[in-house]
Amino acid sequence: MKKTILKMLVVTGMVTGAVLSSNAQISKGSIMLGGSLGANMSMESKTTVGTTSLTTPGYTEWNFSPTAGYFVADGLVVGLGLNLDSKSMGEVSSADNSKTEHIMGSGLGINLIVRKYFEIESNVYFHTQAGFGYSSMSATDRVADGASALKDGDKITTTGMGINITPGLTYFVSPKWGIDLSLNNILAYNSNTTTIGDGATKVETTGGGLTFGAGLTPTLGLFYYMGK
Image (cartoon, rainbow, N blue to C red; front, side, top):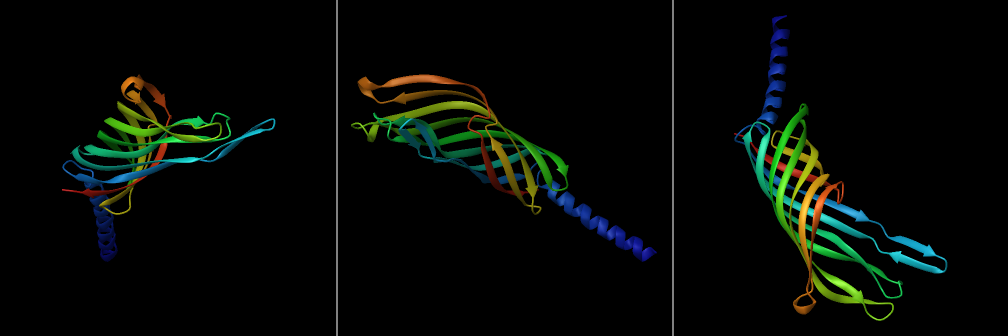
């Protein structure tokens, strides 16, 4: 009987130790390093009106965000991340509507993040992340060239500042490694300025506002946690 009780105590201690080892990685003083990758794909579409048929090509938006953070309290991390991405900035058709293309831009941004972890069960956590950042994106406009062709036009630049809320799940596959599944930009507020052309042809517009689910991008991340 004593041997059985002793074995139970040893097993219980090992299980408890494993859980605490995992939880210790998100305790005050720990460091988080890693990044996330996401993609939003649009398929080719075809529209037919009478004898006229228009095919719109698909496109892929992608996002990569390396991040480093420090746990200022148990389950609460403050960090800094970069944002590298591409985005469809518009759609343009030739003069006779026989050809349509997407204007794709590439961007760079920097974000201050605050993330809070909530335990669901052992090694599985729900997290909510708030990001405050600045971003810049550039692209080349496409304009009609004759009736059925397109060519490069003016340069387009967009700069902006924003706040976004990103919920997600973190699963600890080991005490030091966690896999993230997040939904970027589920709630966001942005203020931006877009400039097209330069010199006498320069046109500048401002915009922004609160959006819900616009530009929603599922992302998969991998993070390394260094506990105390």
